[in-house]
Image (cartoon, rainbow, N blue to C red):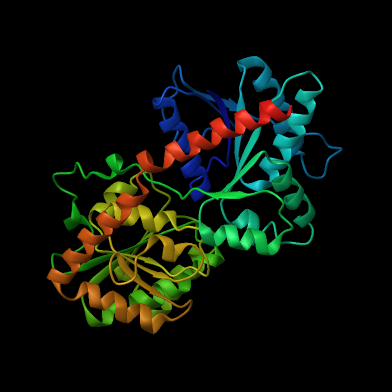
Length: 379
């Protein structure tokens, strides 16, 4: 198949999943075309089966806000015609599904039929999509897609609760390439980050308010009062500076390392003992899954799709949002005893195997085939 993938080319979960999906599809013999405003951060090598097409948005003084949807839909039309793309897989309802539908209608006027598969990732539904300004457009875009998937059962329920959806939604969970998480390091260089008697706690996110960054700092503060520990904070975002100020106020700045965005997540997780994800909500929890794939147990909240990923008492623990004391207690249950810590590390690795991309990507291939078959019958 010739597949066009539209996504945000960022460190966010939806962009990471879309990129990894395209990479695996290309390995499986499909021709994949990424169409977005910048080359995705994890798309390192292009080749015969893997292509990137940049969406340029011309600057016009007439527009107060430049019309990305218009540029994207026009680019999709051009790329479908130029490369014979058979199916568009768009990640995020708006603006991507909206732009894809406009491209589909323009192509139909020229006698070209291309179906749309839309994958819902979370904030396009629970945050942006539910806003009254965008709700009609999101509802329209989902219902006009030829197939719709969500990354968790919880997100499917939220979508059906928040919108008047007339399409069946298939749950295809996020996934991970476990081969990339096979530690090849003979030395994780752990000694550069902490002393031998210190536990290393890690948090990775885009540092938005929904990630409850102050809770990460407060939980760690409680942990380090009981056992020697260091905290690695990976990522950039609006909550980073307030987190640095909170660390100073608590007098623990010397125990926290703010690493910014990093392409060495595997090395950071290699020396980590515990992962903190006290989010207000997560549609899936890809960061938790990446930690578990690196044998790092997870302390998380019990909201959204997290209970579908993190098995309570097995790969880590689940707590209510903002229950800092419970998350601290659970973290110490894992960290204090080396034998218990090793058991949770092993369990985390085993839990992650359920989400190996070799189990999940064929689900997308089946949806593509079914969508193409149904689309050709009805058009």
